[in-house]
Image 1 (cartoon, rainbow, N blue to C red):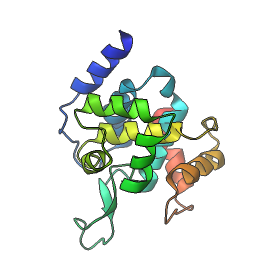
Image 2 (image 1 turned 135 degrees about the vertical axis):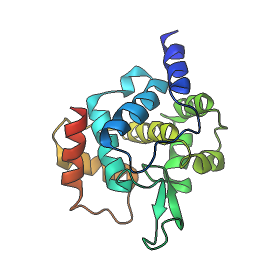
Image 3 (image 1 turned 180 degrees about the vertical axis):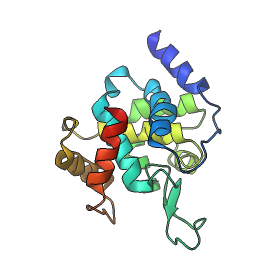
Image 4 (image 1 turned 90 degrees about the vertical axis):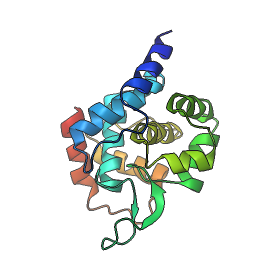
Length: 188
């Protein structure tokens, strides 16, 4: 019953296609995106450690300014292969979350709550239109890692987890410490 109530709260906390204007503040990301996304998932997936990781990754991947991968700063509507504030690719994170043994069931529940089919192409196309979906899939991708979430303040372990799960083509390690500190400020 509690799970059903949490899912209903997440579904109706904002309209399905209502998006916050970009750029999104870390406070709004935490309150208006992460909270409803994590409410769709089992309560064991919501923790300060999870929120810090997701915010740090969103800051690292999109700076909370882009819902798709920008490949040319002169033409910001030119879409690269990654989608959503956490920058998922169709054959990477989307495929992984939908098919991993530890997340498949949860991914289907998230899709149902967000009113979409649990299909790789449908999810991929929805990620830049649904921040809550993107954040929930972000948490599920972290869930696929067999290690525990890093303790708060352990930026190095957090970086290692990000590298294992996201496998970024251009990782920008020099930006991570500031993004992680920023996430710690807003979540802790």
